[in-house]
Image (cartoon, rainbow, N blue to C red):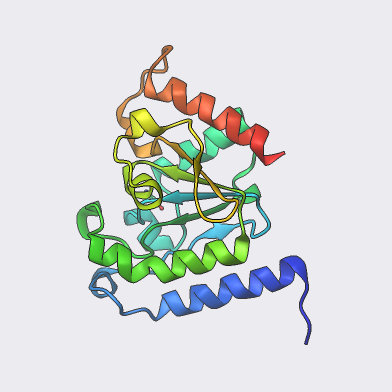
Length: 196
Ligand code: URA
């Protein structure tokens, strides 16, 4: 059987998801309800990478479906003029860290081959990192306020575009000029332009 384009990418992404489903490489497999491999458009030029699944994501097996995800979707729609399914959304780790703590470096390393595989299959032009964990993973930088809205070169032609994590925006509601939300809206506009 020969598979072409989107269909082949979809198959490969599903294959990675199946491997994640039975993964026991780190202790997060002991406390997860579901694995959360990621979902969306495998042909998207833009891939979003968050930190790790929360309680809602763990319950449903889908990334960014809780309050943070709803805000991400709303911002995508209003500022980037994109639907959630226009882009591919995943996380650094594919299982929920207990109490939503930051994943350890060991957990991140255990999960690395899955994220690498997803990037190789999807071949995004831009990876949008949400918050500090993926920012550090891809760029080695640790200050989102200084790194957001800039393009970092990564491997090949892939660029990294850091922005705020939507959970941070939920805790910082002001959207006055110069606030994190105001910058996040600006970043979303840039993402919308880059998509097209
Ligand atoms: N926060 C994340 O970083 N990822 C999710 O999937 C949900 C919340």
